[in-house]
Image (cartoon, rainbow, N blue to C red; front, side, top):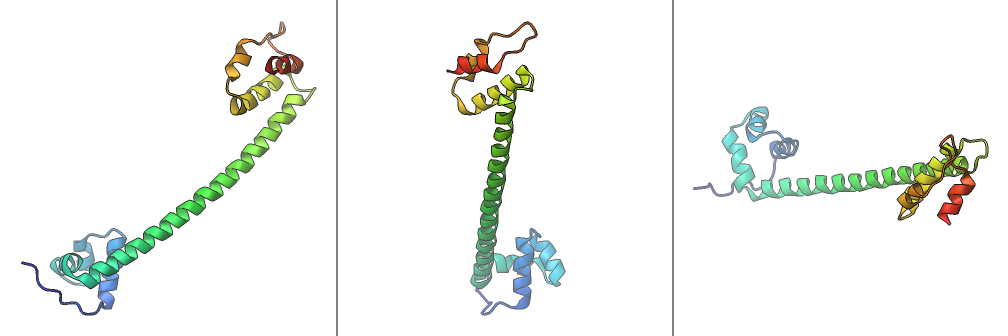
Length: 146
């Protein structure tokens, strides 16, 4: 039978135990570091309302900070990703209309943009007519898109 609650106020060693348990230490490791028995730490974590309350409060606090940090991290990554996508699309758009670029590079740039923004880019690919060196002019590619 479990002993009745004996903790009326948490002491420094209780707070240390909570912190160690939240860091993933076992009850035996916590007890060893505090110089106490494993049974005492087990009793606190299973039967002492003040200890259990503190552990749950700290766990919820850590979880909240973790989730907030995760959300901010994702938001930052998404922002950077959008910037990179915008830059990449700008680069592709410039390549696509660059008269000095090889026709195949210009068409490849157009295909990447179409793959990103059009529903059926494969239709354009299957309908392409190339020159004897395997390239297609930008004008031909644009006619297929229209």
